Length: 125
Image (cartoon, rainbow, N blue to C red; front, side, top):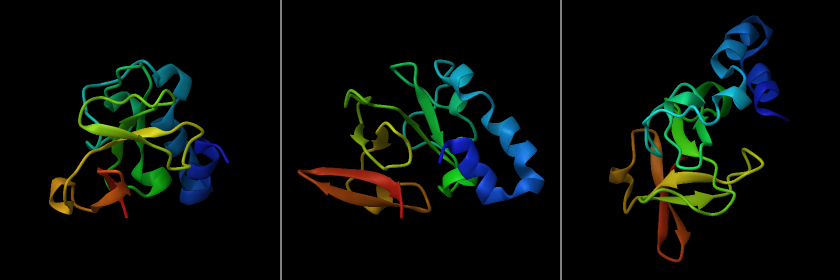
């Protein structure tokens, strides 16, 4: 199921127009990133920074991640310093997640998940 269909399913038909407005044309948003680093709050893809011109907001209203979670697609496995590429199966391409040592390094509503090999990332649990 694509992102827009998932959002419609989550919010119901009465809020579908609002969802369409917030998501907008994803293709137009890509490359128009803002300045927020991986793990920061967001409402739209355009809020998030992206080295590769491919910002993504893992949105609260779509995926249930509190206050949204800035990221970027990392199909090549490369992420900005302080983050790691993780396949969450939310999108067709893995995304960058903010690094952490303990849950205290993550925002409220998120925990520090140990992926093994010394890699830990902040993720909605």
